[in-house]
Length: 253
Image 1: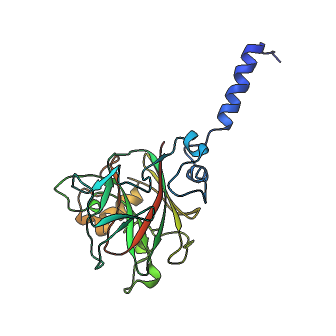
Image 2 (image 1 turned 60 degrees about the horizontal axis):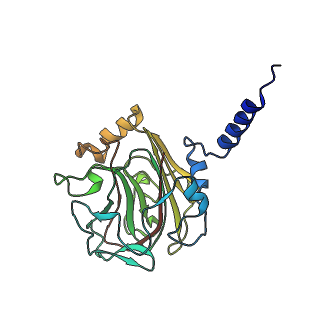
Image 3 (image 1 turned 90 degrees about the vertical axis):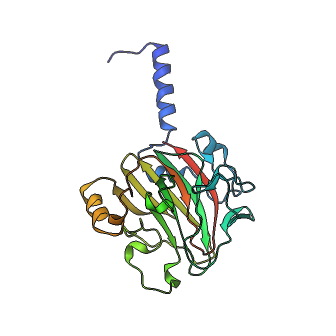
């Protein structure tokens, strides 16, 4: 066996140590494990900062967000006790908010809690253009809904944790109404994973034959630009029912 020179050996050892400290960006659950649970809301730990996470909401201001197709933050949303929440009522789609920045490959973690029969969602790969009225016309949605108290019968692709109108959730790790749930979304290339409370809910490959079949045979066949964009804004949906969002953290991957 050939012996390495001391300097080369030191470099090899350092490379191994550095690589062992890094998370595999191809592993959604490992990335989710980077998020420190039960820390002070709307803050980053030293570990999260070191791993490249950034806050998208500081709990005090609306910086980094604006109304869809607006230049301002809409007054149908407000900051309440360190959360982003909506003022709208009536269970109808109202003004959604979106990030100021677009994202392509990313992981996002946030916490949400709902009132009874609430309905909302986290929509991604959104195109902002006045030819569209709502973010859901272009972007896929991680469904947030109290389906257990919903007044009407729902399809399995409509319940909490689903990829709305596409993929139903594979598990049901829901917290009771009024408790905080942790939502985690991973998007890298065509690979998408949705995790709720540490459990994988949905996995799919965008533009696969299965994805195309579902996209073209269901609700989205009426929306020609749905799922078309690989880079876009992230949206919190306002469906006229009360949902609170906090601890919104994003990592580019």
